[in-house]
Length: 157
Image 1 (cartoon, rainbow, N blue to C red):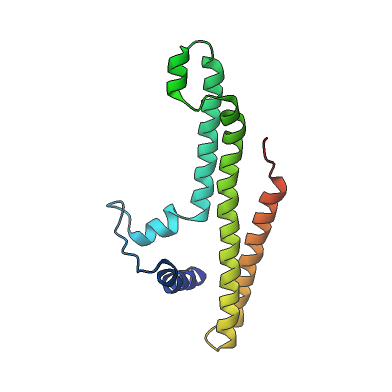
Image 2 (tube, rainbow, N blue to C red; image 1 turned 120 degrees about the vertical axis):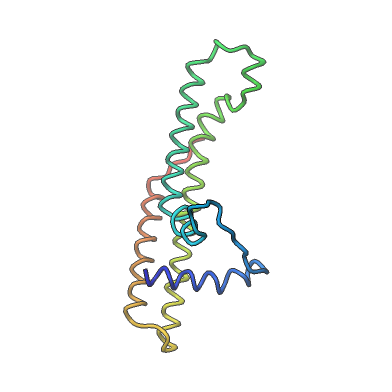
């Protein structure tokens, strides 16, 4: 939790400078605070789980398209959209992987920045060796996860 607090402090410190203005976030759900939304709904784990759900939905649509082929009028088929072979076999395969890769790579870059921040804080006397080690371990985990994703990735073409 301490790492998350440091991350939040870092993000709140850096983001306004990058974005040019302070964020004014209001709750998006009556039973969910902004902090809960950011920590849970917008978490790495939740995003990756959602991508897997989307991948499953796209696979179901691809199977439905195969089952419906020839049973739906050409005009209706075109109106439905996203029924072409290249979209269903290339796009449906590649796009979720591209989003997953983006999220995993951004997580790796964030952990790298947090590790660097922890080292700077420790040298300045505002951090501890334990905090730096924790940041190093989180960086190593993010690196392993991105490397594992990368090694398992194949692009359909």
